[in-house]
Image 1 (cartoon, rainbow, N blue to C red):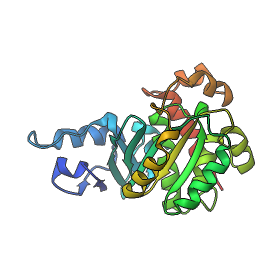
Image 2: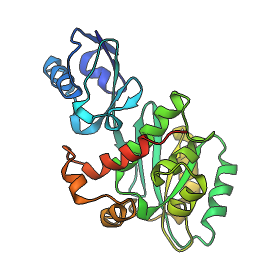
Image 3: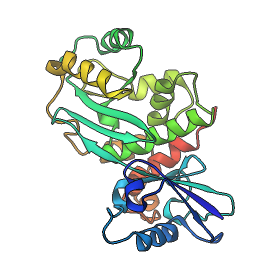
Image 4: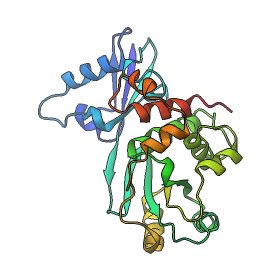
Length: 259
């Protein structure tokens, strides 16, 4: 038997927060097909392109994606990704955690000091800055954050702080100094701030720093630079059966880091 936990808006599709599937030889893809076929027409339908699937607390993209084979006793969590917010901010819910993304302008004279002082003012928020050149898109961010949140839940963080774990996974390295040097905030470069916490604190912080933020979080296609920096070849991408092969390969590199 496979247990399916329905989180957030997924509960509305089944009027329940948990289902039990009597099939021990099914893939994630097959499970999704089964679930979609089981939803009554008068209830909200699942959007496969806008959900995260965790198997025993691990993002399925860090396993074999939708081809992950499920087995007896597995717990599968279906987590809708909810977007929202103003043009200067992107906000979504992931594994019962509110995540916000904003783009810090390169006009900040000392981005490291800015990051440190902001953390001091908002100790109840998790705040990390990544050089914007190393952030592909929102799907890239979602996959990395999901891996870090899963690691925190499993007590397998690469560092004692989740914000450091996030930095290291974006850099695909176990060395903190290498991660800071490669993908950390830099002078004369835009940064993407990744912030986790309560919406009230997120709103307060946003209004405080709004004048320092760019209008669009993602402004350029950084895929060429990212592929070069992480040594990802077109041959590798062609072997990934996915609509988002680069994001999935980056997630795989991040997920295979161990403390």
